[in-house]
Image (tube, rainbow, N blue to C red; front, side, top):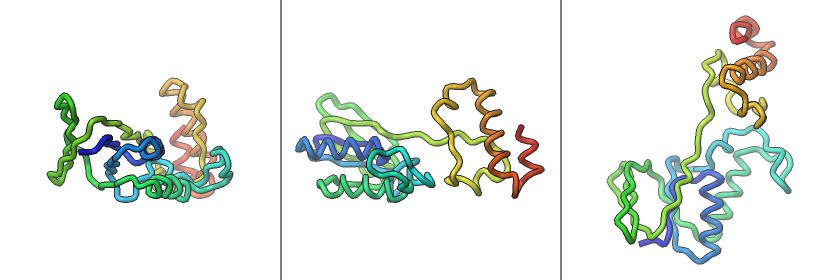
Length: 167
Protein backbone atom coordinates (compact mmCIF):
# COMPACT_ATOMS: atom_id res chain seq x y z
CA UNK A 1 0.00 0.00 0.00
CA UNK A 2 1.25 3.46 -0.93
CA UNK A 3 1.04 6.52 1.28
CA UNK A 4 -0.17 8.56 -1.70
CA UNK A 5 -1.41 8.00 -5.23
CA UNK A 6 -1.36 10.92 -7.65
CA UNK A 7 -3.57 10.64 -10.71
CA UNK A 8 -2.02 12.77 -13.45
CA UNK A 9 1.54 13.53 -14.50
CA UNK A 10 1.24 17.11 -15.69
CA UNK A 11 2.93 19.97 -13.85
CA UNK A 12 0.51 19.75 -10.90
CA UNK A 13 0.88 15.98 -10.50
CA UNK A 14 4.65 16.08 -10.85
CA UNK A 15 4.88 18.95 -8.38
CA UNK A 16 2.81 16.92 -5.92
CA UNK A 17 5.17 13.98 -6.48
CA UNK A 18 8.21 16.12 -5.70
CA UNK A 19 6.67 17.50 -2.52
CA UNK A 20 5.38 14.07 -1.51
CA UNK A 21 8.74 12.37 -1.93
CA UNK A 22 10.52 15.19 -0.09
CA UNK A 23 8.06 14.60 2.76
CA UNK A 24 9.06 10.93 2.78
CA UNK A 25 5.85 9.48 1.28
CA UNK A 26 5.92 6.26 -0.71
CA UNK A 27 3.88 7.32 -3.70
CA UNK A 28 2.66 6.26 -7.10
CA UNK A 29 1.92 8.56 -10.03
CA UNK A 30 -0.61 7.11 -12.48
CA UNK A 31 -0.26 8.75 -15.89
CA UNK A 32 -2.50 8.22 -18.87
CA UNK A 33 0.27 8.66 -21.43
CA UNK A 34 3.68 7.06 -21.01
CA UNK A 35 5.55 10.37 -21.13
CA UNK A 36 3.29 12.62 -19.06
CA UNK A 37 3.91 16.34 -18.83
CA UNK A 38 0.38 17.49 -19.55
CA UNK A 39 -0.46 20.35 -21.88
CA UNK A 40 2.93 21.96 -21.45
CA UNK A 41 4.45 19.25 -23.68
CA UNK A 42 2.67 20.79 -26.70
CA UNK A 43 3.81 24.33 -25.93
CA UNK A 44 6.27 25.78 -28.40
CA UNK A 45 7.93 28.14 -25.92
CA UNK A 46 7.44 28.82 -22.22
CA UNK A 47 8.91 32.23 -21.50
CA UNK A 48 7.35 32.98 -18.13
CA UNK A 49 8.75 30.16 -15.99
CA UNK A 50 11.20 31.63 -13.52
CA UNK A 51 14.81 30.76 -14.25
CA UNK A 52 14.11 29.06 -17.59
CA UNK A 53 13.31 31.76 -20.13
CA UNK A 54 12.59 30.52 -23.63
CA UNK A 55 12.47 26.80 -22.79
CA UNK A 56 10.19 24.71 -24.96
CA UNK A 57 7.36 22.83 -23.31
CA UNK A 58 8.73 19.37 -24.03
CA UNK A 59 12.07 20.15 -22.35
CA UNK A 60 10.32 21.77 -19.38
CA UNK A 61 8.12 18.69 -18.93
CA UNK A 62 11.22 16.48 -19.04
CA UNK A 63 12.84 18.59 -16.30
CA UNK A 64 9.69 18.21 -14.16
CA UNK A 65 9.69 14.44 -14.72
CA UNK A 66 13.43 14.16 -14.07
CA UNK A 67 13.03 15.97 -10.75
CA UNK A 68 10.32 13.56 -9.60
CA UNK A 69 12.27 10.55 -10.92
CA UNK A 70 15.41 11.69 -9.12
CA UNK A 71 13.56 11.70 -5.82
CA UNK A 72 12.30 8.16 -6.36
CA UNK A 73 8.70 8.70 -7.46
CA UNK A 74 7.16 5.54 -8.93
CA UNK A 75 5.26 5.92 -12.23
CA UNK A 76 2.65 3.67 -13.79
CA UNK A 77 1.02 4.21 -17.19
CA UNK A 78 -2.69 3.54 -17.35
CA UNK A 79 -6.10 5.09 -17.78
CA UNK A 80 -7.89 5.32 -14.44
CA UNK A 81 -11.37 3.80 -14.70
CA UNK A 82 -12.50 3.88 -11.07
CA UNK A 83 -11.64 5.29 -7.67
CA UNK A 84 -13.17 3.82 -4.52
CA UNK A 85 -13.07 5.14 -0.99
CA UNK A 86 -12.74 2.18 1.38
CA UNK A 87 -12.56 4.31 4.51
CA UNK A 88 -8.98 4.02 5.75
CA UNK A 89 -7.64 3.71 2.21
CA UNK A 90 -8.50 4.50 -1.42
CA UNK A 91 -8.45 2.09 -4.36
CA UNK A 92 -7.52 3.22 -7.87
CA UNK A 93 -8.38 0.89 -10.77
CA UNK A 94 -6.98 1.15 -14.29
CA UNK A 95 -8.23 -0.01 -17.69
CA UNK A 96 -5.81 -2.96 -17.76
CA UNK A 97 -7.42 -4.40 -14.62
CA UNK A 98 -4.71 -3.32 -12.19
CA UNK A 99 -5.63 -1.81 -8.84
CA UNK A 100 -3.56 0.22 -6.40
CA UNK A 101 -4.20 1.18 -2.79
CA UNK A 102 -3.14 4.25 -0.84
CA UNK A 103 -3.96 6.15 2.32
CA UNK A 104 -4.42 9.40 0.38
CA UNK A 105 -5.20 10.43 -3.17
CA UNK A 106 -4.49 13.56 -5.24
CA UNK A 107 -6.45 14.13 -8.44
CA UNK A 108 -4.36 16.16 -10.90
CA UNK A 109 -5.99 15.03 -14.12
CA UNK A 110 -5.42 18.31 -15.94
CA UNK A 111 -7.44 19.69 -18.80
CA UNK A 112 -7.25 20.09 -22.52
CA UNK A 113 -7.53 23.15 -24.70
CA UNK A 114 -10.93 23.97 -26.14
CA UNK A 115 -11.11 23.22 -29.84
CA UNK A 116 -12.40 25.96 -32.14
CA UNK A 117 -12.96 23.76 -35.18
CA UNK A 118 -11.20 26.17 -37.53
CA UNK A 119 -9.26 24.96 -40.55
CA UNK A 120 -5.59 24.41 -39.78
CA UNK A 121 -6.14 24.13 -36.03
CA UNK A 122 -4.65 20.65 -35.65
CA UNK A 123 -1.75 21.33 -38.00
CA UNK A 124 -0.78 24.43 -36.00
CA UNK A 125 -1.27 22.99 -32.54
CA UNK A 126 1.71 23.89 -30.40
CA UNK A 127 2.87 26.62 -32.77
CA UNK A 128 3.79 29.96 -31.27
CA UNK A 129 0.35 31.46 -30.87
CA UNK A 130 -0.67 32.89 -27.54
CA UNK A 131 -3.86 32.60 -25.52
CA UNK A 132 -3.39 35.04 -22.65
CA UNK A 133 -5.18 34.35 -19.39
CA UNK A 134 -7.28 37.47 -19.91
CA UNK A 135 -8.85 35.80 -22.93
CA UNK A 136 -10.13 33.02 -20.70
CA UNK A 137 -12.17 35.47 -18.64
CA UNK A 138 -14.11 36.68 -21.69
CA UNK A 139 -17.60 35.43 -22.45
CA UNK A 140 -17.47 32.36 -24.68
CA UNK A 141 -18.64 34.12 -27.88
CA UNK A 142 -16.31 37.07 -27.31
CA UNK A 143 -13.48 34.64 -26.63
CA UNK A 144 -14.16 32.72 -29.85
CA UNK A 145 -14.13 35.93 -31.89
CA UNK A 146 -10.88 36.99 -30.27
CA UNK A 147 -9.24 33.63 -30.92
CA UNK A 148 -10.57 33.53 -34.49
CA UNK A 149 -8.93 36.91 -35.07
CA UNK A 150 -5.68 35.49 -33.67
CA UNK A 151 -5.97 32.55 -36.08
CA UNK A 152 -6.53 34.88 -39.01
CA UNK A 153 -3.36 36.75 -38.09
CA UNK A 154 -1.43 33.47 -37.73
CA UNK A 155 -2.76 31.84 -40.88
CA UNK A 156 -2.84 34.78 -43.32
CA UNK A 157 -0.11 33.40 -45.54
CA UNK A 158 -1.37 29.83 -45.72
CA UNK A 159 -5.13 29.86 -45.21
CA UNK A 160 -6.41 33.37 -46.07
CA UNK A 161 -9.82 32.27 -47.41
CA UNK A 162 -10.64 29.77 -44.66
CA UNK A 163 -9.33 32.09 -41.91
CA UNK A 164 -11.67 34.81 -43.18
CA UNK A 165 -14.66 32.51 -42.45
CA UNK A 166 -13.61 32.23 -38.78
CA UNK A 167 -14.28 35.90 -38.01
